[in-house]
Amino acid sequence: MRLQRIKHQTMSLFSRLQHRAEQVLASDDPYVPSPCVSVCVVHPIEGVCEGCLRNLDEIGAWSHMQSSQQREVWQHIKVRCAKRLQSTKP
View 1 (cartoon, rainbow, N blue to C red):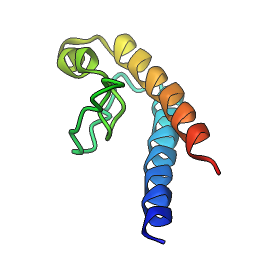
View 2: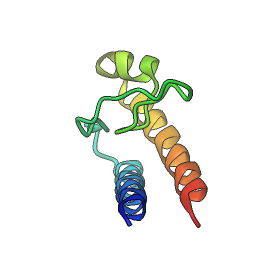
View 3: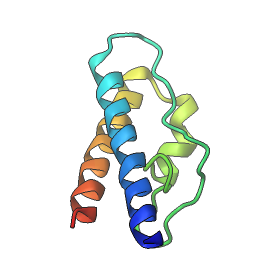
């Protein structure tokens, strides 16, 4: 039961992040919000943050990126979310 709840919470996190990525990518606002959700744990094998799915290079460079580059990162996040959601389906 506990494992199912954790799996559901994980899927929910990635679903929300994917939805947020779609919103950001559909917007033409020059300000691109950070994907950070304050869950800063880097997966030791995949090398991406478990909260926002950015890699360390993307995280470190975020504040210096142009908005077009930030949107590219959001696109990567959207793809990473889709892969995670696909791999967690029963």
